[in-house]
Amino acid sequence: MKTWDESKEQRKRRKALEKQGLSTVERTDYVRGYLEAYKQSTKKNYVICLKWGTKYGPEYVNKLYNMVKRNCTLDYEFICFTDDTQGIDKHIRTEPLPSINLQGWWYKVWFLSNKLPITGTALFFDLDLVIFRNIDRYFLYKQDSPFVIIRDFNRQVRKNWDRMNSSVFRIKIGEYNNVYELFEKDAIAIQRKYPGDQDFMFANIRNHIFWPDEWVQSYKWEMRGRSELTVVNGKRNFKKPGVPTILPDTSIAVFHGTPNMDECIDEWPRANWY
Image (cartoon, rainbow, N blue to C red; front, side, top):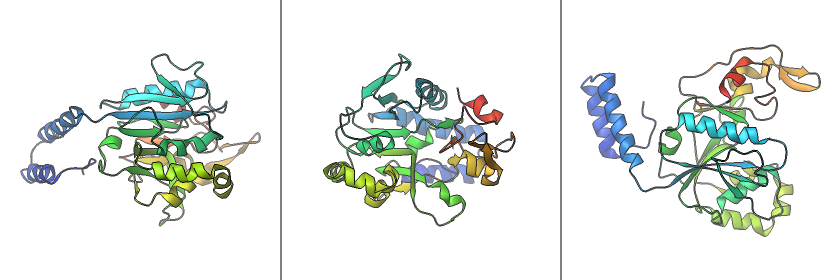
């Protein structure tokens, strides 16, 4: 199964290799050649995250940086957009958030604008997730698509659910400046109208595509199961420690809501979040 956006010639070559019954090593050599060609391109790639306020400490940024470093072999630059750089690893590039009247996740809408100090392609990650397998495919997948995002995790109970979850998205920087300008004109009213940034994005970005569902999974709902959740000492957690179900193509576990990785009673998050 291919996990990148092949050209017609690349697809023909891959099919030919498969028909010839070539060994895994020979097929791997073909994939390696494709990746090398990608690495040599002049396209600039970024991994970006957002840290605003005190909900998440600098350790969340530092661990995200480490997880990306371990699991991405492509060329990229990691940037944290934040209002407080204290405690963030000195190897991480930091950029200030703009002085606009926004809080929390609403700053993600700013990433749609052409006002960022970078150009190229940005892969955004929330801080409350665990990356535990290679993520090259998130840059390689459907490269002509300007906006790729998670199909919201309510898909777990509604199979035809088509809403967005903005925990992981890829964007061609500046492509949706018109959407940001729409938001900027009446930001207060829009924040009242929509529950969150992803709802506003869903209403105004219509040429998006979704990541394959298996790639990014909800730890609570899909990897462990809603029925395993309860309230312990006033906080949501699992009834007892357990082991997640990990699909072959899953590389990212999202901890939306509670518990976060450092609160979860399971051993798996602690073993992989570092």
